[in-house]
Image (cartoon, rainbow, N blue to C red):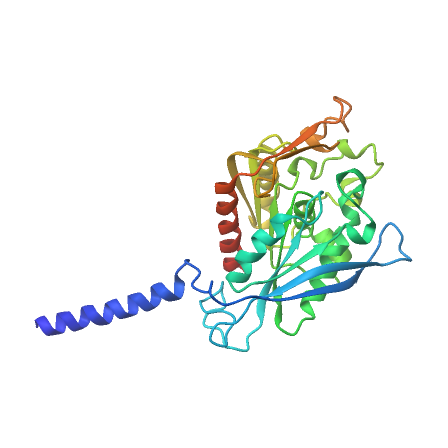
Length: 331
């Protein structure tokens, strides 16, 4: 009897350890080696000058293999992958300051988790040097996201049905917009992203006609309509001291407005005490931006307000871990 009990316990322990290894969240693939990095280009529509398409540059990172395989643990709904299976991928979109440390910060963790990444530069092709001469409205760069989606979908080692998008600030606005059916229909060519992360995406601007009066367009034409969603999961992350939304309230209100009619795809995570760009692990900066302070300048109630960008190391790593888990569960 004692022997049978011991044997049963041993068998249970073995299978429990196998299950724990299969479903653990400790990323046992970190020693997969250096990713395969290439620098690529693709064409994107130029809405400002339709006769002159843009050449967008990007950095494509393909995770190294472990024991001849890309994924050494179950990923999302695609468990026990074969060695020749295709990879999930995430498009990474920068903020108003252009490509910076944030892209590489998330890229490293995603590659370690077996996810390919593509960081693109939306500014270089347009001659943008920073916040001062960025495009007037997000609609002008939304095609870049879908052109990148088409590029990734054409890669032999990428699964076209498992491509997500992560954006910061301006890129967060584009990530959010790409989950709106209007823009997916206009620019997607029948494709859509499988999951979206929008870090501090200026939520008060969504569906906000008042701040667009100076531009003479409606939200649909500005790239800020957010009403009818594609159904893909959306994670919005925002700091309680964000200089654009001034709190997490506008993002929570936006999610509450769209979730009931769209199947509840939007989740909002608030980082208490975090400023705009808390995951930009570079020296703190301030900058003037007419879209800050809930658009007070555009509404005529103040001068051009200042944006405060302060890194928070602990919350940056917490955010990165949450983003990787989100994509692991949705791609």
